[in-house]
Amino acid sequence: MKYYEKDRIQSLPVKKAVGRMLLHDITRIVPDLFKGPAFKKGHIITEADVEKLLDLGKQHVYVACLNGEVHENDAAERIARAAAGKNIRLSDPKEGKVGFSAGTSGLLKIDVDGLTQLNSVPEVICATLHTNQVVTPGQDLAGTRVIPLSIDENHVIAAEKVCQEFFPIIDIKPFSRLDVGLVVTGSEVFPAGSKTDSDRWSGKNLRTWDPESWARKQFLMT
Image (cartoon, rainbow, N blue to C red; front, side):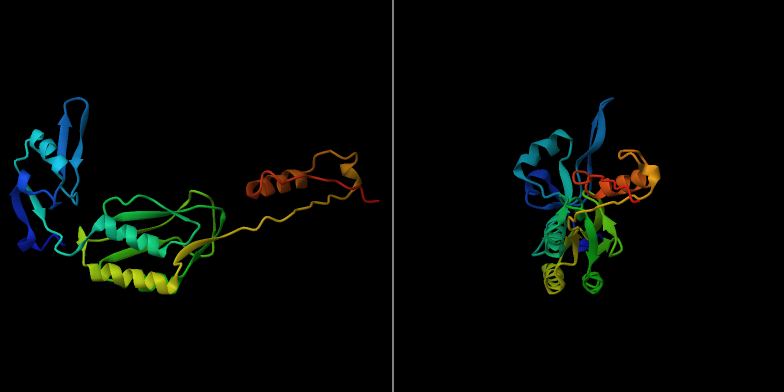
């Protein structure tokens, strides 16, 4: 549903608004303690919400029916799950948006053609980092969202089909664990155990990728 579709907007008594989608934020104010949204636009009103709304002084609210459409959060979650590979972590949906983050270290892989097709689906947006770059666990990689508060089910199905065709649209190719050896030559490193600039530089960088397996061995070359 779009904001300009005024014919679908209704002002209803709170008790008759159960099951409808709220079209505006409702603010809760506790003097000197709290001021913020008690309910956000897009929220589906439940029986449990009725007393809370009445306590906030709301007798009527502006709402709309989904009428076969999919709520923005449900739609964004469906699209995100369809697009993400096994090494991607998804955030909880919020205001029609789901974030993608890295579940492991590795090389970020974006199917650019698939991403282009996904962004061609009406009322759907997906933005990512550039492909083929190194990422670390927990790093934010992408986000997808549904633009209106609710979206035609056919658009969600179309987005899921694109994701299925190009799966995965976003994933990470994990790094392989390899043994690493460092040979430092020259009499300046004798006796073994003396520190060199190469040792400090190499050790620091190797520990970045695998802090547990890094070990240094020196050999005196004559």
